[in-house]
Image (cartoon, rainbow, N blue to C red; front, side):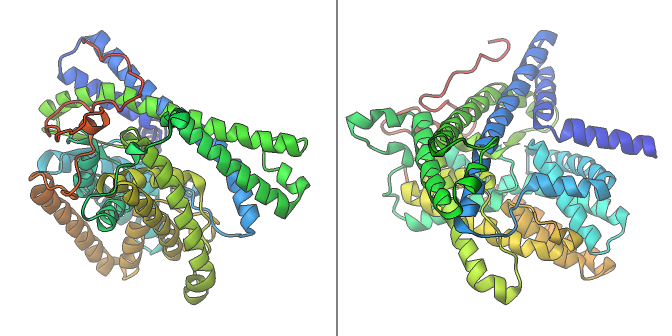
Length: 516
């Protein structure tokens, strides 16, 4: 038994929870199904791995550049509370529930593949680290409610598998509005925030008159701002300087200088380190965008082989940054709006909901607000233009503030760990399974089965009634998918069977796939 547990933990911790390796394996399977040569399979799989490593490298740079900013913002606000961090709470839980999480994740992946094969939901969820986080959440919540281990693993795996195929389907009409076709789907447990952003985008712009964030007109003297990397870096430099000055005025030099690793040697050095961190943020975003283009160049063609051999019609469900290239200005707008929503939510928690309901203060973490808020901005822009990008990011910011506060109530002893899960789907799903499981073992099992069935049924209904029929969640607006990003004056909607996603204007061109 110990050998099996060790093998399961190895597969989860060293392979399935590492998105790059998982993507490489899936790409290799697809190329083998296409009967590519051994060299083409190896080369394509390696390029796919490198593409995801590029995304990971960019994400690491984002985190590094945002860490000092987070310290300064908390110091400038003078607030103390919980910062939602998926990695932190998952790491804490591994010591107590490592084996259960491992088996739950592996079985959940098998359930998802079976559902993708035998239901209309042909989505293959490939964001491995989010599978680990959701498996950890399900284990913590069900175990804290007193569910037996076998129920936690088996029923939890079924629920995880349903989520992996249901959420991409529920979001697909909005995702297709961004990409222009069905070649990819969103595979990230912030889906509720993205759907909400898309829905709110249409509400704030029902007639489709708000122009896209990508159509921002600037004077000739400011033409350099058309470069998304330059615009992003400059915006972050300005934000860094404003926050740095506010933190310095509130906390004093000794404390403020400690915000940076190694400290600052003086006010001038302190301000210039702020400038450097803002510029590094722009570099990080550019690395992420290049990684996305590289991975799509290999993964989408490989999925043609998987679609033909393993899961007919398979659609890869990928991490949130996969939508960033389609509206790069919207990413920054969504991030800033989401962070503003987090500040508003913090104020509401501190003044009203916290004292009334006994909820903890949820401090806005810049990393989750950047990734989920940026993606929410893209979804909001797709349905509501500039208004939608702002409103979508704001709604996402409120959701990732209130939902984690409510989630703490069902995490048992982990509710006092000073951290929690951050993205929207961890919040609403954890709350539902938490209160269902608290009804008792047998009633809880029944309620959880009903919850899974309802979610699966809703996704199948969405697939058949909306995705398969080509329903447009914002028909008043011109398409903003791949054709529009290519710069056409009046782009027509791309065919839904198009095998590739056209690169956005200015995106670097990755090497051609094997055999081309």
